[in-house]
Image 1 (cartoon, rainbow, N blue to C red):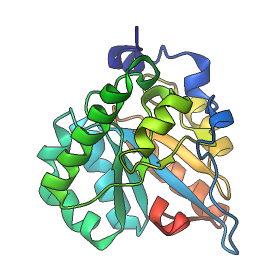
Image 2: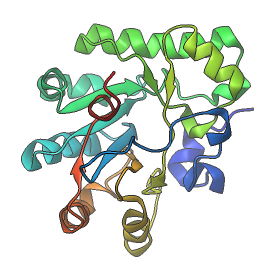
Image 3: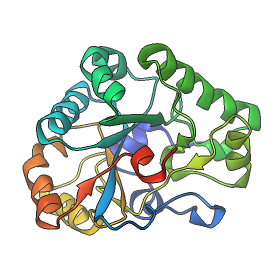
Length: 228
């Protein structure tokens, strides 16, 4: 049985989901390529909170950042905030990538079920934002294996993205612990995992921006970094 989104929202995920991508052995991507510029990819999953999604959009716009949302297409904020978000997607400042339609644990699904989850999300983004989100996807909960990778690749999703560090904010987390995760995660060549399921990160945007600026980091989308 897969891990439910309710479990994710409660913050009760297994430690392997919260801290380190546990499936790097099957060639999922966890770091950015080397560059002359100190940079990291700020990636934000799910989008269960309308307020959090809107806050992220405005934060990126106001501070000239670049960000990748991994869209869980089965929740409403991606339609609610379409008019606000779409111009930033069109400009490339925000990238949308695939996080499936219903947020299942893909390793528990058949090949056809994996492909259906990805393609339903793909079609949602194409219909609402006019984009082809291939080749980037993130398996919910970081759950991935060679069968998932092969199923996704067969439909054009060839870049499974995990993470090098996490904000651990899928559910409730105290301020001090959250900021400790942020200090560990926001580093050169990092792929940082955050969530737009609550207001934990938005309530700390000033502190997060201070980390970025004090370390001389720039933010990039996945397309910026990998060129696809």
